[in-house]
Image (cartoon, rainbow over all chains, first blue to last red; front, side, top):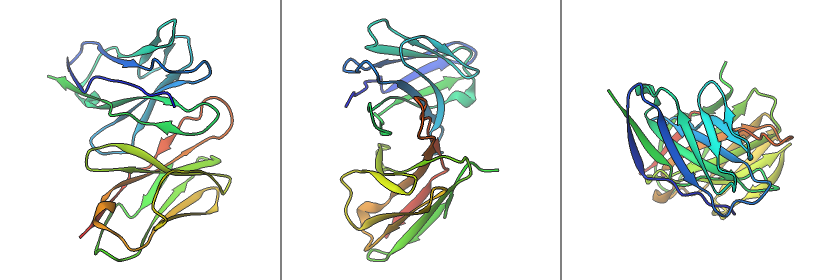
Length: 110
Length: 114
């Protein structure tokens, strides 16, 4: 199973970009990288996912390195409501199984 | 309209009791999951059903028994509750086909065993 490593916590000033890194050095060629966030014990919320190309949606951008061993989630203009725990997940290939790591606790500061 | 709903939201019970948590999704998804999030906030998968068939069964005590009466429902029954079962339990659903497999989570059920 591919595992992910994320910093335990990060702070970001409101209105600035939040860049959340994730290492997944054992990822295999057909495994996707997913990002979810959990706001104050609510259910995790899907943000974005990708395989090898960079992706962007209305919530965030996902930058995946060429070797696919790491990725960065970018929240372009962080707001106080983006304060949450952000999980980088690699789905186990050939299954419907996610393995959640410890995540990064992002605090957006006013 | 809530996509994935769980009942109850809070459950407080005594050790040794039997309790059930219900989950329903109205997204038309084929796959449903149960996760447990403990006090250290680790989110760990317990079970998954695809079209009412059990496809993931992690190392979970057999006091926990999932039941899927149809693909829109996945219930979790817990026998002989123990203190260590106290946690937040999340239900999730996902479309089975395709590479996306985005999971949609319910609001959680906070179980407290006294």
